[in-house]
Amino acid sequence: MRVLGIETSCDETAAAWLVDGAVVRNVISSQVALHAQWGGIVPEAAARAHVEAILPVLSEAMGEDGPPDGIAVTNRPGLVGALSVGVSAAKALATLWRVPLVGVHHIEGHILSPFAAGEPQPPFPHLCLVVSGGHTELVRVDAPGQYRILAETVDDAAGEAFDKGARLLGLGYPGGRALQELARDGDAKRYALPRALPGDGAKFSFSGLKTAMRLLVDREGETLNRADAAASLQAAIVDALVRKALRALDEEGLKAMTLVGGVAANESLRETLRAACNRVGAEFFTPPFDRCTDNAAMIAIAGSFRLARGMADDLSLDVMPNADLPAY
Ligand code: KG4
Ligand code: ZN
Image 1 (tube, rainbow, N blue to C red):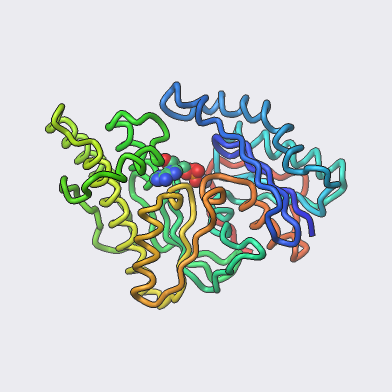
Image 2 (spheres, rainbow, N blue to C red):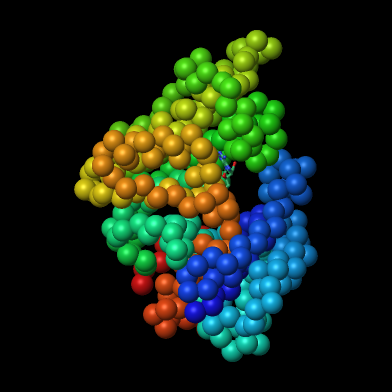
């Protein structure tokens, strides 16, 4: 089965070509440089940039190949103007080629991103830590289509915590990757920052950390060691994520963990969580970097599970700014 995946929910225009579950092409055109001038994503500009990029990205993803056997497109959640570009393209192509179309929930795409054929497959059930610019969730995954959210953030997402910290250190937007690089030579024990661990286990919270970071930057002024501050912030975020994840793994009696989403590209988080899983005898999986940040390969993978069962959406498929994870 050949599946064309399309993703335009935020600031990456992406298309991917999947053959029998294996990722053949994963094309991503990023708008990061465009939005950097405003210090954040401007929805109207994002939609226009998707319109410009979608056809070249689609044709690169398809290469010399003919029509696919199905199309998977992100239709929720996200910026409605941005989503509409991908969904309209997908509807047009599905009509032209007379192939089935499935709308995919963006976070389900992240959750299933480790499931490319030819790579080690996480077992079911497992625990998934979703960490992106908009989401921080611990999800119990019993099967494709069977998800239970065990914990989510009450304020900022982990990616926002990285981005806001990066901005305070003058690193531009989005700053997660730059903060990681700055932290490389820093001393993570230099500055004490809070680990917000709300008691009931079902919540993450990063807004206190952001405030503490601002106070630190103000207090130290010119004497601030930026590398040490970056390392201290990264350690505080990673520590909170890993501790909650390990607690949930234990409480649910699960033996496998996946780490997905843009912040899963963070090397410190990957290695700390991998080591923690090793210590408790749990298997650990995380996709390659180009399937952590937003991409269409994960959308094609998630869509394939439904296409393989003969499920499809019709042309009334709508875009939605907010949506719960699907159940099927
Ligand atoms: O999944 P994603 O591409 O988009 C959303 O769905 O939000 O995640 C983007 C987020 C941004 O906040 C970015 O700063 C963060 O992922 N990020 C990182 C790294 N690479 C990307 N954060 C920390 N370390 C990184 N290496
Ligand atoms: Zn995402």
